Image (cartoon, one colour):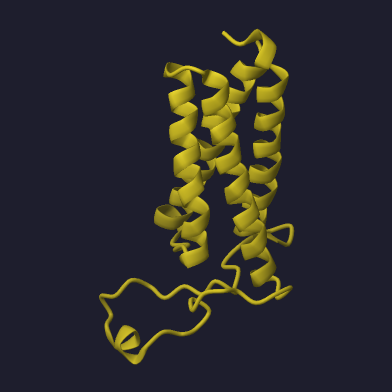
Length: 154
């Protein structure tokens, strides 16, 4: 399997897997996303689309590299979010506040989720931290495989 084909497989599998996990944790286990969680999902949507495009549109290497950049972007946002959760630095959104009185009094409103509190962790690493690890390493691997396989693309 060539580098571009391996990169293409990763470019589809990584965002599909991480988005699938996010939706399972949300709808299966009630771990609703905060604003910064959504920021991490958007690049995965773009990366998944670019990964799928790489299977049908030429040049595949360019689409795969774009997917890798999108996945890497999600990882960097996840790293920032994890730092906010671990109190390494302050977040840049208002989602760390409790919300307005109107929100609190409206039971049909979407749940208020704080960005500075990790709702779940495994081995001391939050969901944002895991996204940082998988997406950053995956994005770098996709970019490296895309460059490595540039000479023998099919």
